[in-house]
Image (cartoon, rainbow, N blue to C red; front, side, top):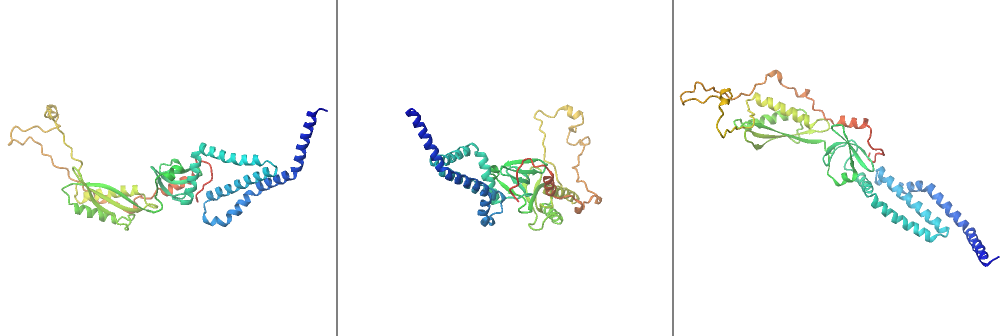
Length: 352
């Protein structure tokens, strides 16, 4: 037998003997690894049980439980490699895991950003499910919040998905947190009208409406001196959970027009002026569109006199009963549509 063959046999025997010597440690490490993988979930829940009262967020509990589970499994892998005599390899694995996590963090930055934003949203809770919110330029009812995006159902029935990172960094207006909402509109009266009378008339009419809140009280203020009208701005408050601000504004504008007409308060159109730089065309006069110019100041018999239009007086039979006006809020309808509609994104709801 040659020297090289004997060396190979001896080295092989040494490796086998080393493996046999380490076999109990390898078996112990493997048992620890399998036991840790099996019990990691239960141990993580047991560790988090004393602090569950700090947060009722299912997402926060899930993320914390997964983090503890991952830490236990990585520690078990390190012990297994350590007991198997692969200390250098174990250190390399642990270091590589950190480097791999850094690489994946850059590669999936948007996903991680949305995940962190969802965690912060569950902790701070700027809104809840079924709340009516305005996020940036989108207004709707919150249907679903997942780890990636929030789904709104707007008042046209459309589903809008907004990434959680955009929501957290954007402007959030919760329209349900305070059920009181202020509506407003502008109505113009003529300069010949009594402004104080018009303001008092409008204020009395709005205050008597059953769906307008007394506190805060409604206001009727002079807003602008326009070219042909004196514009009054009307402010009123409603409970947005049972009254629609758009329907309420429509009803009040209709009733104010009827009241102003009944009291002889004019509401003229914007003043318009037609300029003829080259004079009035003869064709307009011949077609009867313009009155003919009299030959002298005394001859006015051929000039038709025009009377300013008088405001129409509405009949008493057309008086509107406020109790029959449909000013109901659309919030409940949108919430029902959100419950019946198919969720456009899979995943558990992370908000209660």
